[in-house]
Image 1 (cartoon, helix red, strand yellow):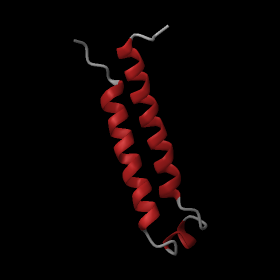
Image 2: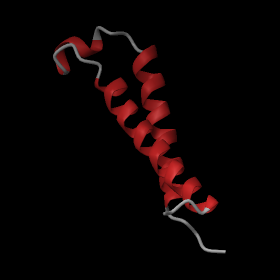
Image 3: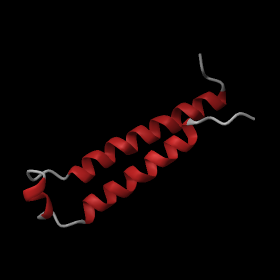
Length: 69
């Protein structure tokens, strides 16, 4: 059995992305007015990390099924 590095990388990025999204959605929007010009950067970067993590997990799942092409 070979270790596919995409599995731990995907899990790491997906978990960190989900935490950032949840943190960004539950914090007071007033803290973003001064420091980030009113943009909630936690939600934005959290979504990017979450999508990347899901992509890595999807590629690892596809490899495991044998659909490499």
